[in-house]
Image (cartoon, rainbow, N blue to C red; front, side):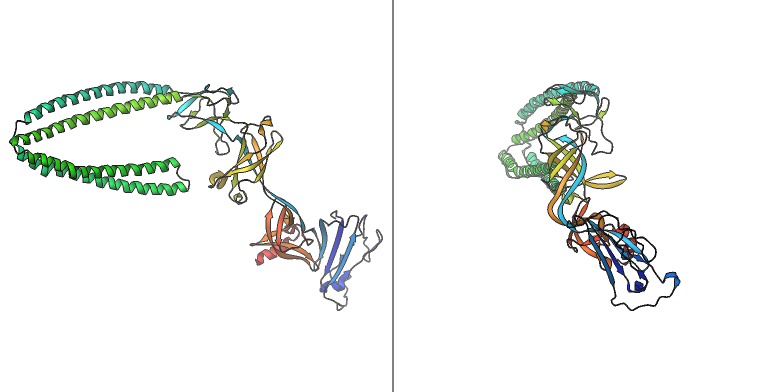
Length: 560
């Protein structure tokens, strides 16, 4: 029998069982009942025992008597010391047609309710200066200071293998020397061509017979060709602008969903700007050709009525073509030299980046992101290092935080500003904090061969962590988020409410036995569940219906 301050036994007898029921309640300890059994009342509140027999005794026929009422309710209530206090549970004896079933019950109570969400995470500094590998080539970690070492700003803390980069730099220096020599030759050739052009132009001033030929060549050849080329450039620039704008609009939509970075979006916008500039240049070039160059050249040719001036124009065109070829050669070699120079500078920068120095004075903490990866990265000498990889941090120990992942099914209850308790088990300490940020987009993770979606959540510790000795980034911590705390909530143990289909039920103790009653529930925690409607304070329900009323549940579930 469950120990309570008040004990109630309720006997409900069906009309068909009335002639065969023997009921006895003896006031003395150990007195025999009519069937030779002893009823033990024990110490404390008086109890009653009912013996129900199915069918006539010794197979004898018993005449059936018409009952004075359909139900017989025998209720024994005995209150002991402290019975004024509300009973936490009741043992109810419910009689069926052939046997008696004792179920454990509990009262619907109103009281405080605290709803929390618990997750595990790790400590980290809220203000870190990251030490990142800026070497663009994949390389190997040669040496690194031990974790926990105190370093000064500018001190060498890490060395990467730069031997292959140095070999490339030596080869590139030779290529740069050769390209610069070729550029010098091209520039001298331009000067020589300029002198030759001057000579030819001077000789052309004496020729006067080619004026008409030169005029027709300009009107029917050079001008139309240049016009067609410029129109082609305009059409090509317009098409490139249209494509750039479409890509930019697509980048904005994708970036809004978090699938592209801001730098990628900015790159798309710059391409639109470049395309607009290219189109404007082509249009200006066309306007210049049609509105100025053509008129000026025609005016000159028509003004030069003599063949000597036509010959001069032809000589200038030939001189310009020769100079253009020299200029193209010069520009090509200049760009090659510039490319070699930039590549050599890039190699030298990466060689310098292989020597990593402390960004500030502090303590070294390796970056091991074990919570975010199925295979944790280990920072040690000899491992391969990739570009932009975070190797270590120099944390600010005055501000600490905890990073956790919350499943998508629970994230609706979490919002910024909720109070938090952070339990650091390794130090046996509990710190206070608040929810600082919640990711707007879930991260996909593989757990037990399944894809789960979790939201990265940051908990800021509000206590003064400078007074906490031994608190270090990377330590495991259990986070308890206080989702809700209410002072007066109608509630039951979570096992007292069951779901049948889409409806929640509780089995209420009535004169006719336990009856399934639909209820509306609210918040819940590991212990209690809120009753919004369907029950009243003081109602008694079966505490664990899935165990004690299994057959009834099977029947109800089959009907749902």
